[in-house]
Amino acid sequence: MAVVETPSTSAESLGLQPFHEFDSANETWPRGDRPAAIREAAAEFRSRFATPENRVEAVRTVDIASAPYPLKFAFGGAAKGANPYINIINRLQVVQFTDFEGQRRTLAYEPTVTEGPQEAPFYEQMMRLPMPDWIAYSVLAKIWHEPDEALAVAGLRPEDVDFISFDHLHVQDVRFVLGTHGPIDGEAAPRPPLFPNAKLITQRKEWDTFASLHPMQWAWYVEDGIKDLITDNVVLVDGDVELGHGVALVWTPGHTDGNHSLCVNTPEGVWVSSENGVCADNWHPHLSKIPGVKRTARYFGREVILNSNTLEDSIDQYDSMVKEKALADPNPRDPRYLNVFPSSEMASWKRQWPVMPTFTYGGINYGSIEPPNAR
Image 1: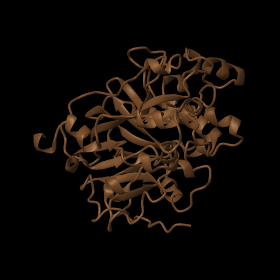
Image 2 (image 1 turned 180 degrees about the vertical axis):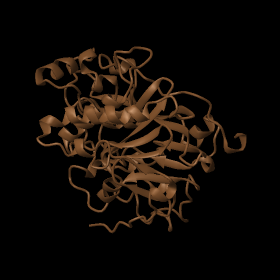
Image 3 (image 1 turned 90 degrees about the vertical axis):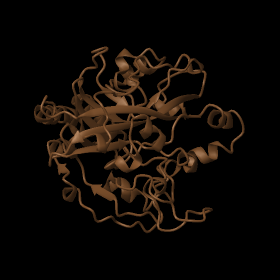
Image 4 (image 1 turned 60 degrees about the vertical axis):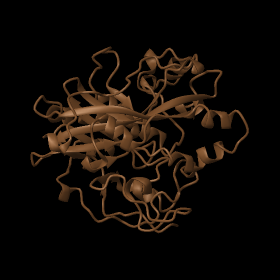
């Protein structure tokens, strides 16, 4: 078992506020009663969260990279297509909000450094395999921006960021984000932090996973991803927490033990973002035109179709997707779809045909992102 340093900074010391509307629903037993309990808890939370007085100041989404992803994982084996790979687009989400002390703050959600995923065993092995797997990663992958470049597109610098977070830590080398005390293997000097003033908010259960990776988790985590990490800026939370007005991280376990979803309130309603699905079809399979998805959902009587590269707990993930739908508002472009934005959304590229998203979100963009010196 690896030795994992436990950070000591508390959420409360930073003004973050835990909330408890879902506590009872999360513990509901038997499990068949849990979806209804979750919907009831979501309505209670929304009654105070989804108000005009409780909105974020701005949200901007910027593409970072696309990566190949096995079709069999994206829809839990439900989708049928000739190409064994789809592409998913990772996007940085920049959220500006007013904290509970009245200060404007910036959250960078999903600031993936593109070097990190190549170290995860799944992709590291994929790059060494014969074609077509090598082609899928080395040719079909595309990088648009590193996180600092994506921030610049939004008009910010890394030092302007107060908080960073990921829905979970699959394929993340956190050392590239927070810096290290000593050199990473093969490097001459310690890594400086990419975001020198930012606190990383992650679930304690997600952090603890690095201490001992289960075989069902191993392929997707960078094993040394927090080795010799500067942990002064790590904040561990246990469950649901609000960062400020109109922004919360909602614990949504299942895909990983420590998965959480970004929840933001905007003039377009409440949006929720995670990688529990890769496109709108996962949360709305009854509307899907992807071969096999609607049929599978109907055959098994399911409301959602899981993104299932890992199955740490598929029932929890199902319930978490129900939670996300219960929190989200209808999309203004097509109210049949809820504002559940995949943090890595499937591309609409013809080479994936007939596996094309039935509805594409493309990002969350609202308001004006402001650098600190402009406030």
